[in-house]
Length: 435
Image (cartoon, rainbow, N blue to C red; front, side):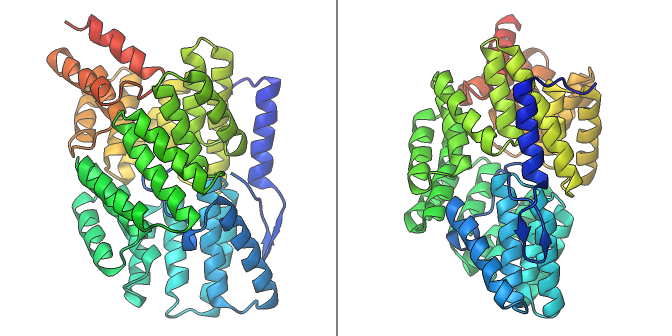
């Protein structure tokens, strides 16, 4: 059944639709300008550009290409910038524009065009086509072994395909060839996936110390804040996200991180205020679900349903623009939507890639469909690398029984006692009931 929208939700849905299908004119054709799910280790903006700098850079490239339409490098840079706009602003319509710009660059220079190939790899990764991303990143690196974006995207693709040992080797190689903020943050995430939080933090601090451009500072400080939040260190998360917002006041990922940290410290009002601002600009699944759960936790179920309804709207629009949104669908729908659809989406994602995130999503979707025996091996798979993610621990605890349940629910709450506005309370209740 389709969700019922109130007048306020209908306005938000209309804004979302206009943002994703709007008619701002770009070089080479029409397209929208607006708000893809936040990845665990997102790409740093091209050339260190932050929120404002990225938009200004796009406008400058558009003007340049009107005057110099045969500049293959300019088209490659514009295509890559469109990918980054789509990712940071939640605007899947930009992917079609990116595709056109990158295709034009390759038409102008079919051979030796590593910038366009790296842009195609970034576009494929943003659309969650990680096999394609890996293929194009390798093609780009065959032309230029030192290309920062291709080195970074190769790591992303290997991580998202669940090839963690290969990702670690690729991160080592990228660090040796092209040390810098984009590589350091990926190197850190590969370490975190293996349970080395201390090592990840050390690498990110090194990256932040070397960052000078506002966009690099905001991106790296936010990544440190997110790492702190996952470990339940809300004070550090607030400090790092504040640092990011001082560098780039429009950086949405930092504001979302600050909201989660505020919620962790009990400042629900501040958290809701932050997240309402985030979703008003960029209505992405993650903040929409978190805002909905904050409303739900304080008994405002009508407002919660409005946020969950917008997740479905985003998913449909993302899919229409070539984004594989199955993982987002599975995670949101399992708790707040069509559980059968969640299971179908999770199975489809698991068929494509075996990562800890897809394993967790499949385990939870199976559980929500009453299939705990089938779910438990996937929940154990999700916790096998040492990655310290409280929601994974919680899911395993709910699915398991007896001592295993107590162990994993306890781990979740010790690691991050506010990992979810709804789930954390549910974990405490279940732990009290478990003998």
